[in-house]
Structure formats: structure tokens, C-alpha cells
Image (tube, rainbow, N blue to C red; front, side, top):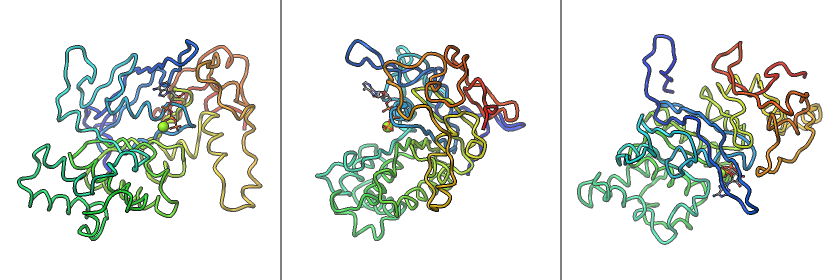
Length: 342
Ligand SMILES: Nc1ncnc2c1ncn2[C@@H]1O[C@H](COP(=O)(O)OP(=O)(O)OP(=O)(O)O)[C@@H](O)[C@H]1O
Ligand SMILES: [Mg+2]
């Protein structure tokens, strides 16, 4: 695992591969209303880092992924890839910088062309970007690529169409394609949600290997805290709620010591395979299980209508994302962060 150099004592200060500074993303929705899919989001992804983004459906995870990828222009804020602004006025990002960020989507059926064989799909970038020299070299590179993502023997897979593969195999092809241009970071948006439970771990292990051996950083978007912990291990985690980051820090620190009631609720919602333990679990009684309408967000703390610990101040004052005294790398946006009654 590569270490984060930035901010470490005595360590070199590195330019983050991706930096979002005070990014906002508003969408107009029917009825003349607006949905704020990202509110003042600041985030860095450093070399070789794994950053997991978690939260319920509609909290803005994919929006953040698309903004990091440079395909969605935020309504406010700045996006830098390798220190260069993606949307700067008059500036056109050079191709190499943009290609440093690649993506793996949840639905490999949609992201792979159904009428092309794996060879057609995977050989095209080698030719287009002049990475290979001649057809024999292209074929060798495609075979090496299939080998590198565990599609063995490659000669068996090379002529297959996406529909002839399992969900896990298709996802391996998507990951293979994402690595062709030697990216610095891969945005993996729910990459294992469509994969059979028995194969999820092997896909996460493949991404781990790419992280450890090639130093590729990952923005791992998921609603599943268990896979975030498995894949992220000693990486960082960002918890989103209604477009805002409500908590962030080291994955283990957050999982074993949530400072925001929302993360505490998410952790309690994870079912245990042991029925006895599940019964013992009291959970935190959320006042309301439903997410508020994103087009009419609550006043004050966005979580207060559901929060069992909410007090008067939470109804009016929007808490700022701030460091915990005990751990400056652990941030939470709660008036009672780490102090709420348990
Ligand atoms: N193009 C769009 N037009 C209007 N609203 C949008 C658009 N894209 C996203 N939204 C809204 O922005 C919010 C965040 O959406 P986003 O897809 O980023 O959430 P998500 O966390 O990825 O959800 P999921 O877990 O279901 O994939 C949602 O309320 C969504 O309806
Ligand atoms: Mg999504």
C-alpha cells in the first residue's frame, strides 16, 4: 500500500492526483426546484490511496465520482487533476492528464459494447493511442492484459462477447480496460454490486492487487460498509448524506469510533450472520427511516429530522465539518460530534 505523503510529518508534500475544492452540484428538477447533489465538498485523492465513499442511495456518491472523472462540471468550486484545473476558463486539459483518471461502472453490461468481442473492445485503445506497434504486438498486449486480470487462459476469452461471460468476468474486462492507459486513479462506482456474492471478494482482491502492485489509487464508491472496509483496509473513508460530507477519516478509526450519529446508524444497520447477535443488537432508533426529499432539504443539520440525539441547535445551525480533538485526520459535521449519548 502506498502511503499518503501529504501532511505527514517530515514527508514530502505531494500534489493530490485529484482535488475537489468547495465543489457544489445543483440539478434543476421538475416543479422549479433544485437538488443539491454536492454541497461544498472538498476532497483529495493522493497517490496510491484508497478512498471509500459511502452513504445511502441518492446522497451524491456517483455525482462526486463523475466530478472527479471530469465528465460532470460542478455548478461551483474547483476540480484539479494533477494540480491542473479541469474546468478553468480557456484552459483545455491535456489528454495525458485527463487519461490519468479512469472509471469502472457498476453495470458491465452497459459499459461493454455487446456486439464486440473482448479482443475488439480491448485492442482498440492500444491502436488508437499508439501504445502497440503492429497487430502482433496488439494481440500480445491484449493477452497480457487478460492474464493480468485473471481471465485465464486468455486465448479462451479473447473471442468471447460480453453476454458469454459471467458478471464477475465482465467486471474483470471493465477493470482491464480501465488499466490500459496506465491511470493514476480509478473511480470504481459500485463495481461489485452487480456481481454474485461469491465473486465479490475476488474482484475486490483484483483491485487491491492493482493498488498495491501498480500504485493505482481508487475512489471506491459503495453503499456497503463491509466491502468498503475490506477493500479500503488502512485507507480513508468519506461518509455522505444529502450531498454533504458528514464524516471522514481513516476507515478503521471511523468504523470503530464513529463521531457522527449517521455513521453510527449505518454501522448498526449491518446485519450479522449470527441470528443471536442480530437479536442482541439494539441499533440506534432513528426518528425516521426515510431520507428527506432532496429537493426540500431540512434546515440546520441535514440529519436532524432522523437523528435520535438532535437538540434545538440542530434544527437551525448547520454544523461545519471539523477535526476531532482526539484525531485531527478524523472530521465530522455534528454539533455533538463524538459526544452524543449512547
Ligand atoms: N442528471 C440529474 N438530474 C437531476 N437530478 C440528478 C441528476 N443526477 C443526479 N441527480 C440527483 O442528485 C442526487 C444524487 O444522485 P447520485 O446519483 O449522485 O446519488 P448516489 O449516491 O450515487 O445514489 P445511488 O446509491 O442510488 O447510486 C439524487 O437526488 C439524484 O436524484
Ligand atoms: Mg450512484
